[in-house]
Length: 272
Image (cartoon, rainbow, N blue to C red; front, side):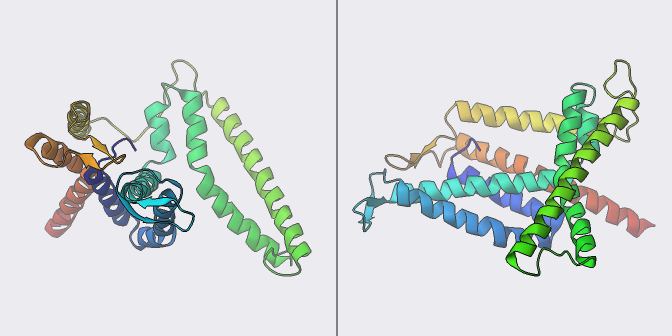
């Protein structure tokens, strides 16, 4: 979200799409074609239609405003940022489960971690419960997809009321259950299957190194890029290229780690 350099944007987007395909396969491809691609095109078209800054005038719109090359390129960059951020968050939702979040922050911020973990899993559970309620309502002749407009609206309101009631009751039951177990009390112990081992230490050292190196490159101007009034930035040079290579390695770290684990698993299976 912070690097406007086009090479960094392409690295982030391609890496995010690669990891999303690795995690979800064809589902990630469908999501990219049906949701991300139209949104990217819309964002790329909206900016030059309303933003007329830039020194390179290509033509004039029917309204008399200029269409500049800089506004088009900036619109593409903004669309790339939006697509990459959404794709990374889809990968986060696939990897970061609620039990992992509670394990990381349960002792530091117990109340907030519980609320955030409930929020993260609320959407998939809400969608699953919506399918259950919809099927149940259809069995008793109260489907929201058939009948007159008034009847469908009435049935839809009934389904929404059922879902809201279910979500409130579920939140209260979860809070009472966690309170009865002593969640958040001082000295409370908790079982977890996760352990911070040598692999985690190595990964943490790698992430800290990449973060420090990229932050140093950004502060030194190695990732500087501007779009207005003219397109200008750093593309060549040993240090800018090294910053982009480290950024590429950082973005591909999840794919590399998963690929190595898959290779080890297949090797062990072949030995067995």
